[in-house]
Image (cartoon, rainbow, N blue to C red; front, side, top):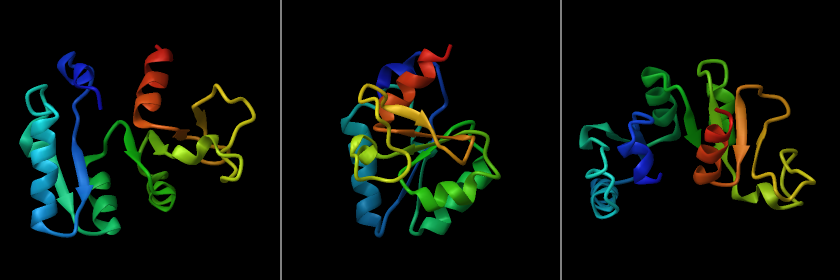
Length: 136
């Protein structure tokens, strides 16, 4: 996430990560500090952790974000009935061998999912955020 989005008060960012240890959690916190996310407005108390995919689902359903971004399609399918907007980050989007979310137009890097109407599939987080800005 580009720090300028946070500094411009465009959104309230809540970051949650699935980790397997306290040491991994600390590496994420240290990385947020090194990247300048805390200085740009991400509050340390809004960096949340869980140890399972079920935990990510539970956090998402409790927080009810306006936009939920993740890389796990099965989690998106589970959350689709409960959250208004979902974005699946799929670097394989441009790969012709990937799933039904591929496109023939190589310049399209974010597109609607063919079945889940509240889900977009994007090549990267940056492309997802850019596409949201383009819709204004």
